[in-house]
Length: 364
Image (cartoon, rainbow, N blue to C red):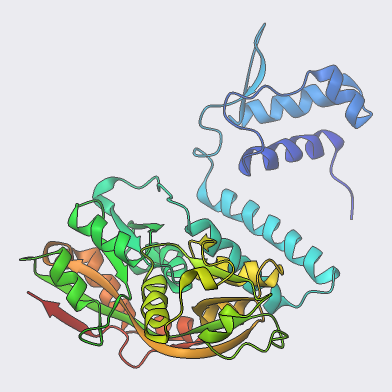
């Protein structure tokens, strides 16, 4: 196969840097002489590459101002071109990982985990507010996948995700800072999930509780469980390092209740004050040998190849006020939760009972 002319290689390298954000609108390209020295070519070759980029409206060139990335260089590119460039980059990454000995399933799982960590931040999508649903609440890997798939579920709409913990999600709902909350708060007095807390924090509001799934919650340990941890009392043993969830997380609420029942004081647990915001971060901390044990869902343990001991099965609900429930995008979401694709996604993650997925309970 004949190699493309050098000026095209130079232009393609700059195009890729623009598409993937390495060069931002307004950034100045290197001077022609600098680029010709870097590419070991005549200045005219670089000038021809720059002219091609100018013709494609990726850069602008003005006397005395140099050659700069155009203000709308990426957004004005046809979607198929951008998508093709992204696929090319993904294939290059995949081939590199396969060459290093990773299996395709391992690479896919790693990408999912990276996406999950990215979604644990507050992300503002470039979607008009009227086409955006905001989610705040407890972490679950399925929520990250749901957000990534949302345009497929509700075309031309986006789901903006912030993982705040179950209590934080309900508070955000009460303060009208979100449209959907995600919660798995267990009430000791009634031995039930979410409903008592919804009634306390959203009095007089009519809200729908849509079951995402029942999740297996338990102790996550290093592979093979070298510390021989079998229950909560083992957390008090000398040398056992624990990683906790943040205050307000449903997992933390459940743990604190169980510790009181067992007569265990938090100060007896090394690492009790060390907290992270997601189940994935709990698993990653253990996988990196910065802790021996944490409390989290089985899906996170499976993703990192860690040992897991189930302590309970909890109900995770999406909570939507009546006015949000009436939105077409919300209805499309609820319908999707009852479909085969949603069930298959959770089955692939592992650690879920999806028999009541999409079940709706109204709280007046």
